[in-house]
Image: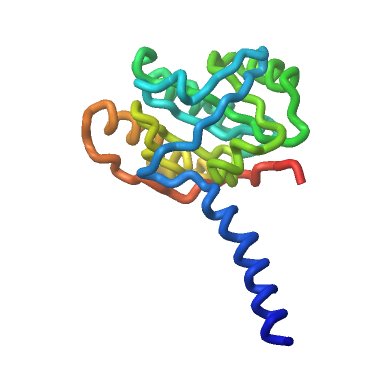
Length: 196
């Protein structure tokens, strides 16, 4: 009887773990499809951007790491370096307590142009395995995930050397038909405040 209970317990544990692992987006494979509304109520789907590179940025304005990058204009400066006809930047907020009004106010305050997609249920965040804010993903023109990880290699913004911007190097490599220098890095920042 004990062995049966043990087997059942293991099955339950493994059964709970496998879907979570399987749900995470995997570099080199097709990125999970999604359709989300932005802060103004406009729908955005990954499918509609096929043919372009798509940068996804998990964000939360309340996170000190995100605040530091927006104060330093890291995201908008990175986007400025890309050809707007070839690269799309989408922020996604999977914070359970977020609302479109909060995203609109933050966007206005910071003065950036890209949409902030609303994911308060956390479905897309979980599908990608987004763990931190910021957590960055780059998807190629065929919908294949080519990078997942940090925005750069300077989590505290205190390095004496210029930070390596992983998103920029990935997009530049893809646009130039070259191999991506690092397809994954360890994301840093605040944990995504998913609905529990």
